[in-house]
Image 1 (cartoon, helix red, strand yellow):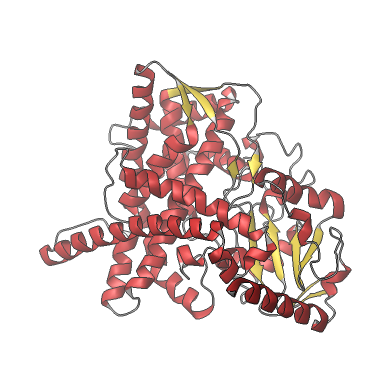
Image 2 (cartoon, helix red, strand yellow):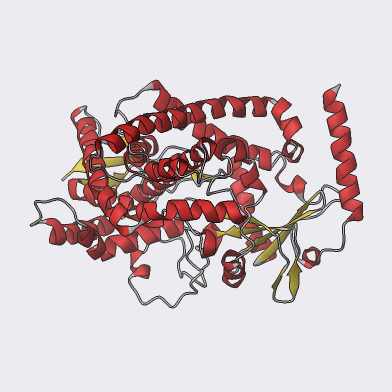
Length: 487
């Protein structure tokens, strides 16, 4: 009996919303065909994640730099213009994330990624010191150790008779170890424990479920979603990721108390800052859970996927590998004390390589904002209650900004940069830019430099590229297989 009532109430609300809405200026902009009431929601109905990605990235070719989709009285502006992107991302009050993020709230709570207003400002203030230069410097040894361990893992595979690696799950393991040891202050056992496997699988499932929900309009309602098989699967995934994160918190909490009492010198982890804030009454245990879940996901998954796409590209470009190798050899050949921050700073070519990887494959290809205050885009008023989706993936492949945009050319970022400052935003920009971007780039430099110094990479199929699909981060349909040949 409950489901028909919920459906009826939902339909009544949608009809009221549709017929009582004021004229929205976004209605003037082009977009897919809009049917009465449902709008253009039917555009993505029944499409696979791969088909959805193709459809979304085809929109600017069909309709131009501003595309509007509608659904049950909601207006969603998709923008591919750098000038629009600057206005949207630099706005000091329109910092509320779009609807897709609300579907992740049961998982991440209203932590730094999702929160808005005063709560977001308070959390950003608590967490910013965790990414200070001196703290990042103390993490360098962990990055170096994990990079060497990763290389040793590749050597063991070679001894086992194979040089072909399924890159994404392999890299993901080491990124999970690194985020646990740096940001969380605990050392994760480098085995194939069931909890680690379940945690990573649950995150993959959550991303898939969130995107299915986003493109299935009737599942936007919480009650219907929770009753649906997809909602029940989502709940099981939540149990696994929350249990893993809670264990991390409890383990660090015990160690933190011991270290505080013993007065031992220790590396300051992000989780330590949260525990100290809890002691001062600035955050509660639920708040700590929110931030730990957020950083466990963002700190390992986004970097792992960026590195995986980067390894795919390097494998197909031997000349780029050799330039990285030569740069690293010239900086590190006489070094017996390990890599230093100044060494990383001098890796100018590798820096350009990482930027070009993130240009072609930004870990977060689209970001959304819910408009809380009217603003203007030229002569068009974007009204409160509308949503804006910024297409990072597409703007970074625009041929007018990046000639030969599909080609992997790190030298683009060695030349004097005359591009618009919002033409390259893989870490977002403005007040909600990624707090961990320096952390991520340091980690990527350590891993890629260590791999290239020890292996030559080769593709299984020269020129092959991953087929992409929609998810909460950029993912591919099939595995990425690369050969790692010892130097």
